[in-house]
Length: 149
Image 1: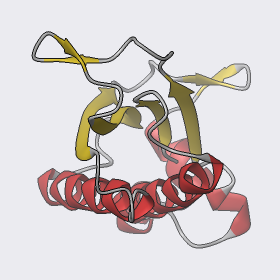
Image 2: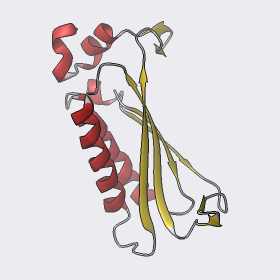
Image 3: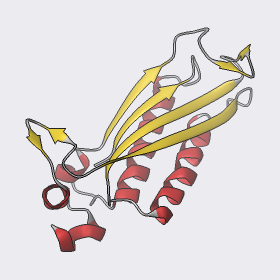
């Protein structure tokens, strides 16, 4: 159940581009975590956008709002859900999603980054309870982890 906090560079994405990006990130995150394509499972896939204020993005010490279409993600995921191959695939799909969302805007360089925060067992509270991996597997239905649910 992907939980992605996504920071965008100022003015790089309009509302339609953000929607395309949110859909692509949801699909990539759910694919990485093997979340089944079921409404009750996918409703837990969250993408939270925050756009930086104008004039607040710098690259190489220079103001770079107009030069970069940046997508910077902090992704919280339960420890044990992702292996190296799943992380690699997500990194590729993240970059592809950002490039696709900005298609037609050739003036900005697309830059992506994702820090994956693997939350240790017993350290994730949701809806008033600590969620442990076996319970989360049963709740969400991670296809590749059903044997521990």
